Structure formats: structure tokens, C-alpha cells
Amino acid sequence: INLEGSSLQVDSIVQLRSITSKCRGLRRLDLSGNNINPDVQSFFLGTLMGCTALTHLNLSHNQLGGHDDALCALGEVLRKCTRLTHLILKDTELDNGGIAQLQSSLSVCTNIQHLDLSCGRLTPFGAAKLAQVFESWPALSHLDLSSNRFAAHPEHLDGLDKLGAALSLCQEL
Image (cartoon, rainbow, N blue to C red; front, side, top):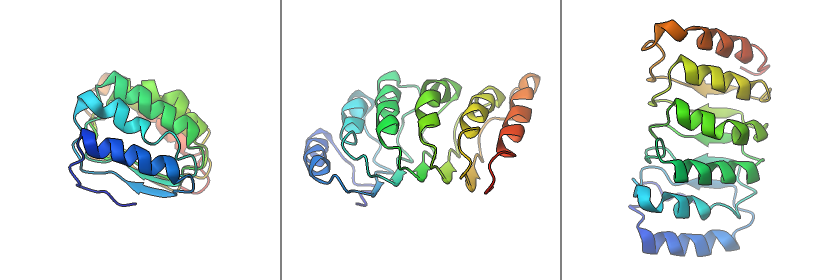
């Protein structure tokens, strides 16, 4: 299902929840560019709880970073969607705290091959958190971390070293 840029509002999210609850075999879902209101993000992400067959999930261009309820809901979704191979979180304002909050959930998604975290707010501290996740992702073959803030904190460059070491374990990268 491609709902990119659909300007989803509360009433359409309620309908989406009804649809996704009936589509247990749904494999691809693109919800990018909807600028979901932070007040309804956790409810919005709750629509994905029954989509355990998802292999491709695109949530790019939605403001997830900095919203604890939304990140908690996304974490629950990721724990249930263990078949994910493609996860796109580009331009979601995801920062170090968000990665730290999602770290255990991401570690469960061991089938990830393609991850896009570009245009975020990650620094070397976030890179160190990602390194711990990537140690359990041997199938990772595409990673986009462009346009983050890795150079903003040179005092924590050891996080980038940890990231490099973890990526060397990804046999497909």
C-alpha cells in the first residue's frame, strides 16, 4: 500500500487502522510524507501493530524524533515486524535519544538489508548505539546515514570507530 503524501488526519488514520487489521499479509507500506501530527503519532503507529508480515516500511518525512510516545509505539511495531528487510526513516528528526530508545527493538529486526536514516540528527554517540544494533544484522547490504551530524561532536569520534567495526561484521555491505 502506498499512501505517500496522503495528508493523513485522525479520521483517515482510524480508517487505516481498520484496513491494516484486515491485511495480515501486508508486505509493503509507504506512509512517507504525511507530516502526522505529533499528538496522534502513537495512535497512528498503532495501526501497524497487526502488520507482522511487513518486509518494507517507509516512514520517511514524518516527525518521529523527539516524541517519546511515537518512538515507544514505533519500538513496539518493530518488535512485532521481525520480517522487515527495508526500513526507511529518512528525515524523521531521529536523534541520539531516539536511536537509544529504539535500540532494543531494532536489534530484533535481524533481517534488515536496507536502512535509511539519512537527514537525521545523529552524532557519534548515536553511531555507537547503532553499532550495537548492527552487530546482529549480518544481512545489511545498504545503509544511508548521509546528512546527519557526525562531525558536530569531534570529542566523541570513538562512536564512529565503533560503527566502523560493527559494519565490518555485515557480510553483505
